[in-house]
Image (tube, rainbow, N blue to C red; front, side, top):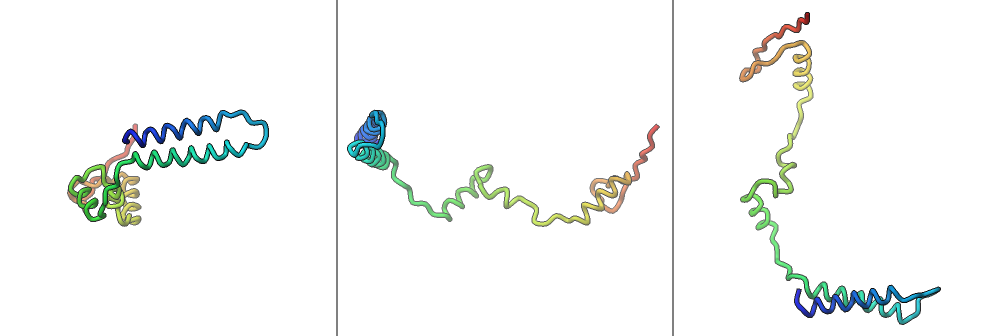
Amino acid sequence: MGFLSRFIALFGLVLLAHANTNPTTSALPQDIIIEALASLVLVSAGLVLGAEKLKPISWSEWAGQIEREGGARNPYRRLEDRFAFWDVRAKRKEFADWIRGEVPVPGTESETVSVSASKK
């Protein structure tokens, strides 16, 4: 923020604090209402003038940059990596095989090894 915008924002905040600290017993006097509104306008103007200039963005440039960088910055990563469908019947069969004690051999899904579940 430049000096002028900081000064305007600070002056507006001082006016707002002054309008807030005036003792009132009933309805607010007209001058305090005007002072509060003017201070809000000054604070807003100071903050807007002190903000950095907006950069034009293009969705395609942003998406290309995210794709090149990869990693955790991609907000759509969870959606892209999720499973499209979950095979309920296959999971049910895996669970039934696990309950029966048949453990699938890694690498070959058709062969199973029977595990004895005898407890002494």
